[in-house]
Image (cartoon, rainbow, N blue to C red; front, side, top):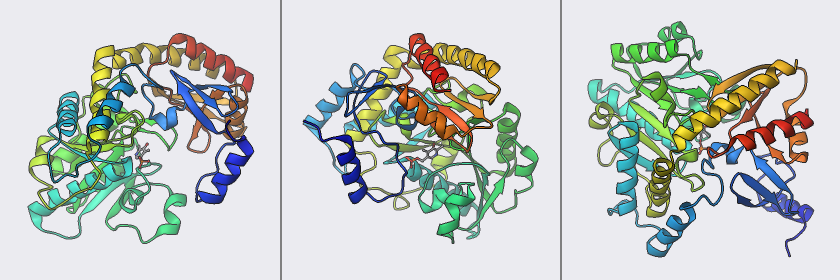
Length: 397
Ligand SMILES: *Cc1c(COP(=O)(O)O)cnc(C)c1O
């Protein structure tokens, strides 16, 4: 018999450091695109553990592959070769058309590696020790010191200064503001292809192509953070593929393992050949056989079942239904996003209230920015789940 919800929440608050104000739900199990709490209540999941559970819960083939890897080998360290890491890296370079992969345990660590890549690349050219990176306002790249330093959010940064030096901020989708920050010391420009936490703002094509051109002109590395918007979510394996703007460094995490904690930074040939070398970077866990078996399996299942193609269809339908809502309700300012990463900008009422009401209706949605309702469901949702979500959201409204 499971303990009752209040007891579990109380024990958690007593033992777990209070850095999150959690919703009063204790989730216990999942099946398909549904989650169940300890009281047996069912929730349609349009949060997916923050865009992680791309394949939902217990997707056919996923659990079996992970269980098989547990039975073989969990961990070896990077002092040796292992088969799942080799396979996962091959599949990731193939899916991205990029050159080399470094596996990490999280998104923020992938960002750290990307920043080090940019600095080393520039250092090899001029041996300066004052290189700069341009990042965007309202961005989110993670909570470790380097990633936090390029996260354009004053509330997140303020208590932790001094952050790493040499960071300049520009405005997202404002090419001139990026150009204005370029100096002879600039080694990298980092941005999310679609700003996620900041409120679901896709890059305009003009902006992304313009930034790429600036990077080429000044031999600066372009780092695209695909941690939230990548892995099929936009209807392309990586969001930049739709724009035809290939980064020098790409960061992945979230849906990369579809539930197993794993991230990666992926380098094109230029970055791979001209930056990190033996001794420059490392990790004990990163690239371990278990995590890499997850990555390898996820990429296989995406291909086997045409997940990315499915997202295009499901995403088009979700877009259509959300546009109808935006039309119908005055407090919805606009819909933004692509495919299955969507946001509704809400005005005149707190988004958190809608989130809590939705939970009562058996629907999990999350927020982004300070007034955006964020929808990042498992990539395997069908039309009927979109309809169910809309119906529950309307009741929550
Ligand atoms: C979630 C996220 C990160 C940080 O990933 P963690 O695994 O939480 O460290 C970085 N960038 C983007 C765009 C994200 O959405």
